[in-house]
Picture 1 (cartoon, rainbow, N blue to C red):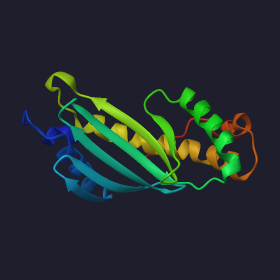
Picture 2 (picture 1 turned 45 degrees about the vertical axis):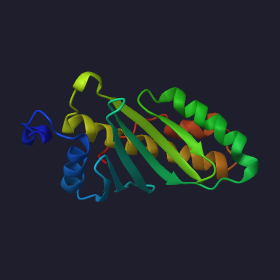
Picture 3 (picture 1 turned 90 degrees about the horizontal axis):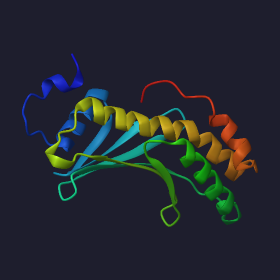
Length: 166
């Protein structure tokens, strides 16, 4: 049975779908509010904190996938260069560095304008893509920050497409 087959109603809240997916995948989650959910998804390199929030105002399901990272001050320029190179390879979503929180962040927004309804498959794919991207580029970020590798050299680690399931 497809993940979306259980949703036959016209009006299903996107965060309700996310909650069902989190339970289905046995991810730890917390429904923070009616329009927001946070969960932890285990990866090979890290446990990723993923938050999804629904904005009815602009009809967008926003997702942030974060992991902690504490690069030394003298590595920030190299990290920014690596981020630019990584984002050139990401077609859905983008990475950013939140320096004050010491978090690497992968962000994506699923626009559902005109009253569109997200499917469980779309949301599941969105979450899996975030984890796969974080898993794919985590080693490159680490090599730039801790192994004194150039962004170009570090990204060679991420050239091969990662396969697997979140």
